[in-house]
Amino acid sequence: MQKDGLNRNLHRVIEDYIPKTVLVNKNKAKTWTYGYDSKYDLVIISKDGTLGDVIEIQSLRIGLPAKPKECFKRHKKKSEQYWERADIPKELNKIQSIFQWNEKPSEFKDRWVDYIEKEFERREDGMWFMSNGIPTYITGSHYMYLQWASIDVGYPDFREANRLLFLHWEACRADKRSFGQDYLKIRRSGFSFMSSSECVNTGTLAKDARVGMLSKTGGDAKKMFTDKVVPINSRLPFFFKPIMDGMDKPKTELAFRIPASKITKKNPKITEY
Image (cartoon, rainbow, N blue to C red; front, side, top):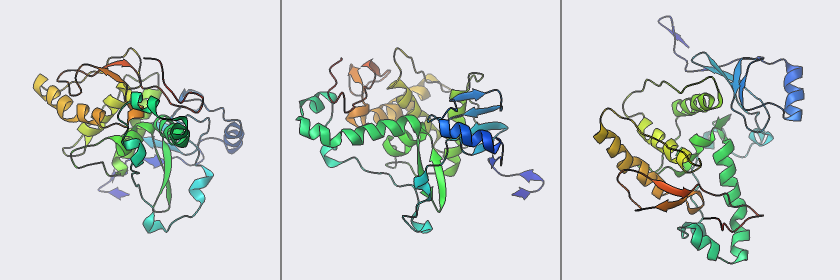
């Protein structure tokens, strides 16, 4: 879209950026690597070895994963295709800690381990969904924000502008040349909640890490921590919660003894504390 001589588009898809033969062969072998690809001068944020659309955001070329075949199956009308948050199953919602999970019988764990594995997969790789007839990819961090970050109005709505921000953020994380992301935001855009969600997401996965917060004053940073970061962390499902030291609602820091451990079919009971 052009208006007053300015390009108002937030991003664009670069058609035929990778030679078709190269794209097909490498996708078949799943040999695309997460990170900066110097040969094609783009940052690949796909984690499954495939490459689909190459988009450009603020002159940065970003490679998305290839669209899965499921995206092209027509399950609903276009008007009925949109992001929908899925409530956690009631039986799992009653479990508040990994200790309670460990006490459950094997039959119970076998019934829910696939669900938990799928959530870890989406947290790591992101996911696709159909939006008004368009296959739409969101990163793992964006998925955690939409699905599990409880904010002041409940759970967030899907916004395309936020999707592009998370795509760019994932590219900044993947690119070893990058020192971070500069983002000029507007008020009421949800950025404080998005960044708080990412603090929790990073802090509950990384081992021996320090995740800091910075604001214009120490009081503002403390308020964001107590009002946003702590509630988001406390409302995570049990399988994403590390074991904490100290209070459930701390004033200055969230201290974890061990990062969240992945529950799998081969390891349905976590015993390392």
